[in-house]
Length: 66
Image (cartoon, rainbow, N blue to C red; front, side, top):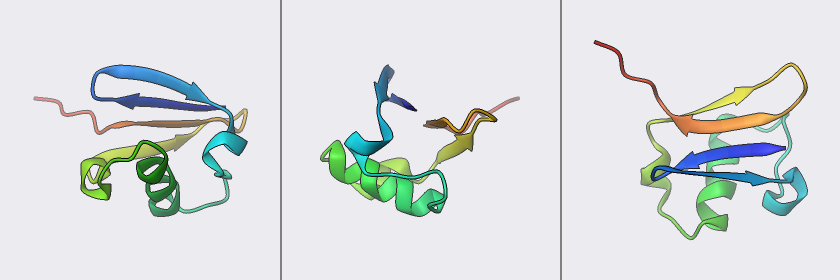
């Protein structure tokens, strides 16, 4: 499962929908997501890719504290 938080909305996709695998680099995953959402790669510059113990991916904006 791939959980995406983008522009204030949350989306869940199957890995096969986005054609991503957990072994891919963060950049590769963000590129596939940008292409899938028809968005510029620049919009994902400050996003992080988290890999859960269960093998899921979470793609979200960086958390800013302080």
